[in-house]
Image (cartoon, rainbow, N blue to C red):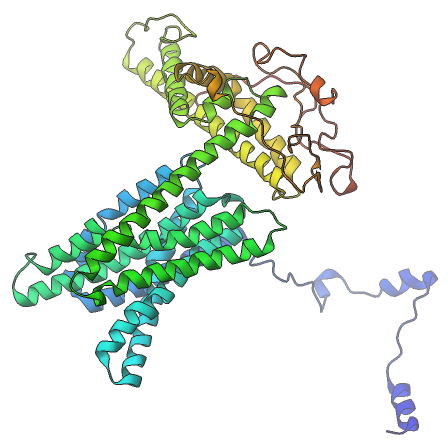
Length: 556
């Protein structure tokens, strides 16, 4: 193209308005009113940011998967077989869910996460497994002209890969999008267990329904195949699918508790856990090919010991979480937020239960027209019998007090785990705000929970010296964590000092609270020399002046 033609095109283009400061108002005044705009700002991505839309979308997807899997299973088993399989498959579900929920009692995860994992395993994962396994088995049978070998290969190779990957997707989704609820090995085990329980529930419906159909064809009723299938799947090995998927959950749990700088570990361990789950699943499915006694050999020599080992690991991780409370919370007792006995009581599940029972009993007795019930905080006698209305009010007040203590225990547990994350360098940039929020919740409930926890620590004997934990060891590599402040000689930061002594006498025979931390005033930057993002430290909605807890209201 010649220079002349280029110059001619440039001359034919419309002129661009020249920006002159003196004429800016005149130029912009020509813009039409908002109602006459031809171009409007578009909210790119705003629709998906709606929490309601996300919940509805997830619920819709799972519901559609459930309807499809329901139709497929009913088509294979028939209506009677489906109903029989459903009635028998539901029996082990409450036991497994109760076991996993018991394991998660120290810091219980939200029920919505558990129900999502169960629904994903029962609907989405089961649907993917049925479609993928059927397609792969048929393809192998057509390619090899050996249907029997295709079934064996599909059960020992294809099914473990497809099923464990589909169940692991639930763990991955919660790990990515509910990261704050995913803190360690116990969380990974529980989420994986719920997903696998849901998957096993749907699979058991299919197997038990088919077994009932075979019995109907042979005219034996429940005499043979159905009973044998139920005994093997629901009595001998209800933990099989949870055991496999728990390997993946353990990998994600260790990754969740790893420091941010350990990137290889955070990526490799979930993958290794998934591969281990696939290998265990393949060994279990292939046990029938090892001879007439192969199933029993694998069950006794591998599955039972593996189940015992995983159970021990899960319980040990649960006890480790309790030890975290005993290690991290004394710093807040020194700062004045907790009494000296509260960390000891909070680190014992038995003491926690006793504290809730004591609060329920004392406040119910007080509301019933008498003083506190038997215990170190009241006379050893019960109030006189009251009318039905008064007893109902007393019961409601007792339940409210027990709920208050339970909330106090939950917030204290979250505070201890938050402090542990800070020492490991895995806490987010909103660490100070989250700590202050938790301390605010604790302070509001301290009037009710404090005496109950002190009583529980005394009754359980945890005031003896052997229960006093050692301070946390230094965490190597974190002399100063960005955004959190300088760490002390034990590798832990100084908690936010309390403005005034919150409860009773001083828990330690030491100088007034605040002096060990250079007498920082409440509301000043407690985490180091630099505030977050270079901005002046602002405690947000928290009152920098000392305040008293609100009066206890059982109806609140």
